[in-house]
Length: 308
Image (tube, rainbow, N blue to C red; front, side):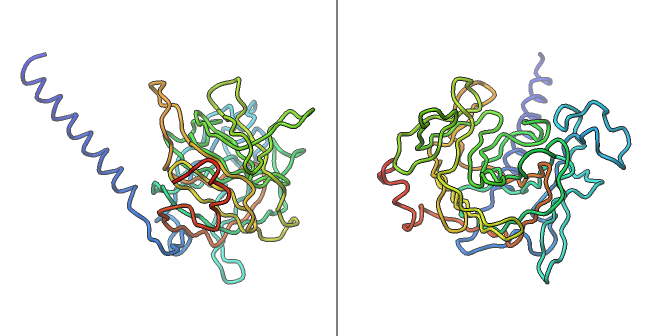
């Protein structure tokens, strides 16, 4: 490599790194300590859409893979939503996100968030779709999302999941390389762990097969089908709380993920994704505010594990 080539390479690296840093700064603007709506005005200001692979049964689209199970084919991709899986509508004078559920997908925040309190309202619709016709209605809020779209099932990012599923609202799943610790117990004769306040911390991992990637909530606090549920997610320095209708159903600690280089590092911020996963659903009143600590009213859920 001659001198001219070396200079050119250094300049190119500088430009790329500068652009990347600027993008990270742009996407990591600090949020207010007051509640800020993420649904007011033009949704495209705060959100983008990624649509996964249409199931073989999806009608009205060209070139649908006849062998697609909804996860194993080419995704439609970024901001390509011809079926309007994600659609903002006015309902009773309020702006509401209507998710058809027909194709797996994600409404993804453009901004990266860390140390925040997220609050929203959610309810189920009526329609269900393949490949989940015979299963519980499913949705989810993915947080600390990093990396590329499509890392999990060709649609979602590497992330931690606040599960939104009939009867399982507030469960945890790790997606595509994440790990976390949860106070939990596996009762005699059961196959899965349940969250238990002040219980022993157990590792949950989507990286290592010897550890589970799913933990059940502590108890069911979901409202009957068709009623609005208030869901809250509190994240602060690797700790998170899943709150359903005012009750903490799970506390989680030491959020982390496996880097492409194989190292496991803290995962304390990222984008937010709202899923489409085979069931019609509605979201409204999504708001977020920054926090500088876990609010005092929730300290009893974390004091056993965090002393500061």
